[in-house]
Length: 263
Image 1: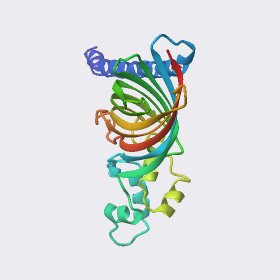
Image 2: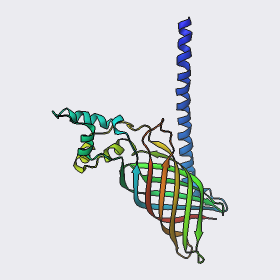
Image 3: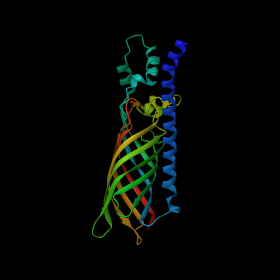
Image 4: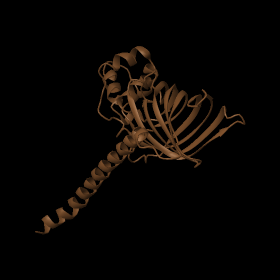
């Protein structure tokens, strides 16, 4: 009886903690997709003062993931290669041969929806973009915070500054991050054909602090088309106990935006 009671004391708190984490994750996912649905359904439920811009974006980004490769499945590849060497073949030798790197550049492209209201210095943005880890994978993001656009006297040219919080679901973060961290092109292309572990860097979602600034120009008599360039930085705030590798990145995006709603 005492043994059973002690077992319950040890197991039940852990089970309750796991259940709480699963429940919190489920509600985070639902809230995330609920916000995304709202962003892309705003054109049918507009209110006075609401401004909604749909943008097409293309550019480049540099990911600083700072992964400790020795703790990932890529280390297993090193151990396999080590078996074929008679001499002492260290991880540093492997990293030099395969040109392992903890930061690299990828092209970016995709769509975004920017929502503002009246003169309030606030913004809400939804993004369907290629991943900073791999242009072949998708990233979904929702961000919000403080932002303002400043026009010149003729209301043609403008500068914009945004800062706030961003939640992302990055389907490229993981095995693609590890593969693209291999600088040797031939080795990278070969390893990409079979190396695909599931979530080797942890769950591919993150909480980011973002800063964004740029310039642009308004076109057309109705001023519903804007063309501009934004530079941005995103700092991963996700606790390292949850995920050690980072989603921190910087980049530049050129865009064309169409004003869908201007009330």
